[in-house]
Image (cartoon, rainbow, N blue to C red; front, side, top):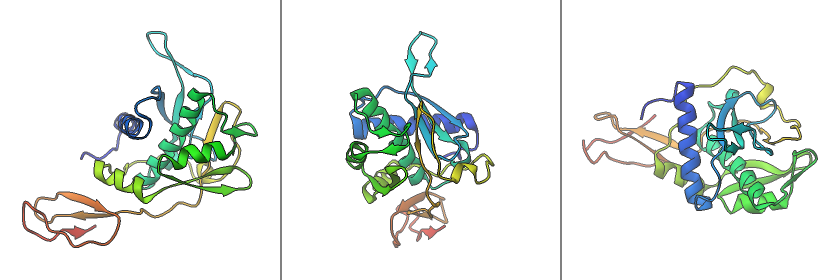
Length: 215
């Protein structure tokens, strides 16, 4: 796979993630938003409550943003953020109010939907049921699709990694301490084919007959 080192390619990659996740967890029922890559102070991402974008045919769409300064996190954390925002979007479409306090406090309605989508949700007294991480089931799904880490990130310093409040027209994904990747990558020394696993494994490349090496 080509490395995602251009914003246009990264945006396209995020759109691909959205469509696959939409099919897997929502039966393609979520209206596709405009996916953006911008700074989101004190959050990993947001979804606008209002439809903030107008397409050429006049259709209005929500905005799903991934914070530019956090793109270099492990792919399972990026996917968890995208899926977190998709849960908000699904609830918006269904008329379910899953946040209060100007969109910062996540209630149990959010938790219920998110956990049904293979997300692990933990409680924080300031932001409610919002602390998000991928479950093993989600990581297995990521591996099965061959999704790779994004190899770029905006230098936003620590601003986008500091928990804080959002604004009335967006529901933020509040950052926690950055985690190490939960997956391990192995490469064949011959053909350079790569695979990922959720634990230490001893595997041999079926094409070359060589033992694959952990990167």
